[in-house]
Image (cartoon, rainbow, N blue to C red; front, side, top):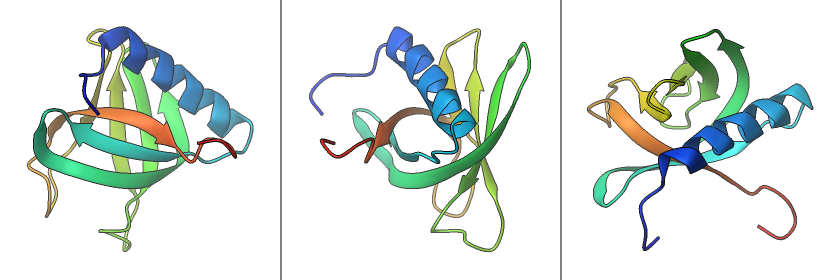
Length: 104
């Protein structure tokens, strides 16, 4: 990673993730806070709820396997947010789909 993630890309990425879930293809998503190292983690998305405000993704977090977690996408700011937990203080994150197909 050498460049930050533009908001248009995060909006596009949110749509791609919803499309994957609608097809039954649960994506693995890398969460970062560029250029900070506050979070550098991957989660599995397995569902979502959407409304006018945004999209609430349901996640499996290997650091917290006991219960599902959440990753929220805010449509107005075109920003992903993750709540605080034992390893992350919570707040804005950048998200991108990894292991998307046989090429990457």
